[in-house]
Image 1 (cartoon, rainbow, N blue to C red):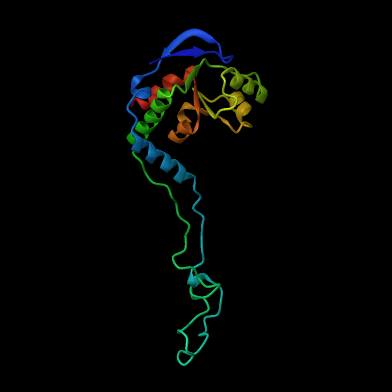
Image 2: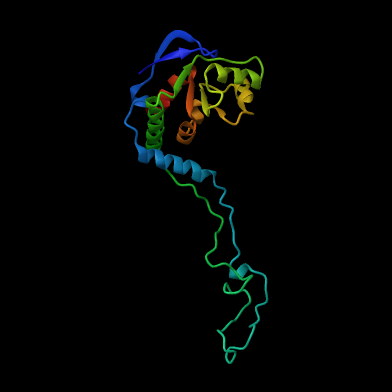
Length: 209
């Protein structure tokens, strides 16, 4: 699969790169994608929810009324779940929502996500660029040149670039990551992927294992 290379001004450089069919042109495995996205979202959950159960509620332990002769049901404690202010039955407890997935399945999910974006023609390859200093306006100009100023975009760098990252940090619709930080969720959550040339070899190397 050949894709033309643009510069950061959105102009064609006259060069093309070959994207690996084993990464960008496979038959997507929807179930693998589902599991990887599910794991990503599960890992974002803090799991700090807690409700007090009967033994944890503050209150007297005395029997609140006699056992018989009241005409109502027996009651032994104001902390009973039946009463207002009583404990919660089977309430939520702090726990981790994370679960394990095999590395092979996660690689398949990322390749499926790339293939979906490639099939939709939502992948742009841009030659490596840098800014002299962090500047949000410069990054906005790059987005405008690529026609992405009003779209959710994900820029994938080959290696960490502080100036580019800081220039994009204030923009809600754009995200900048390195190839090693890629996730299936991030790929699918963006309308367009902008792959810098330096990231292509690393992406294909990581996903072709």
